[in-house]
Amino acid sequence: MSFQISALPAEPFAHLFELSDAELAACRGRRIVVDTYPGVPCRVSLRDVTIGETVVLVHYEHLPVDSPFRASHAIYVSRAERARPAPNEVPAVLRGRLLSVRAFDAAGMLTGAEVCDGVALEPVIARMLTPTNADYLHVHFAKPGCYAARIDRA
Image (tube, rainbow, N blue to C red; front, side, top):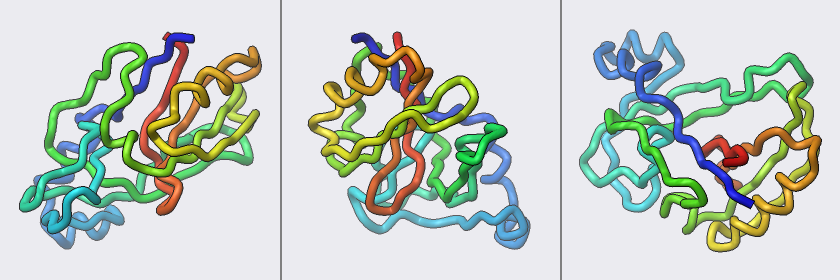
């Protein structure tokens, strides 16, 4: 089964880098200079941010649906360009981590969930997108629990 992994667009976060620390805090955000690698995965570039680079840690509603599964969590974003993985391409930032994969229907209801190592993601995607009631998948970094990316049929 062909699939497409999507990063978040950069535009909704660009203004955060221009805010003062106080203004950023009022938006539930923090400016952070990365001091470990790997360890800070950007949701816009779908890469681990390099040491010394500045990111914003911000609260993000990744599942803004009208269902009991509406969800949000903290995410890191950098000033980088939006990643555009090719169909069936799994970015390295997902490969090296334990992932939680969740399937949702058109009404935002959970239809399935699995945990897998990133190196074994493709069979999980195929299995979870096979039922016709699964419209899309959300991938989370399982240990911190934060949203990583969306997966759709290609």
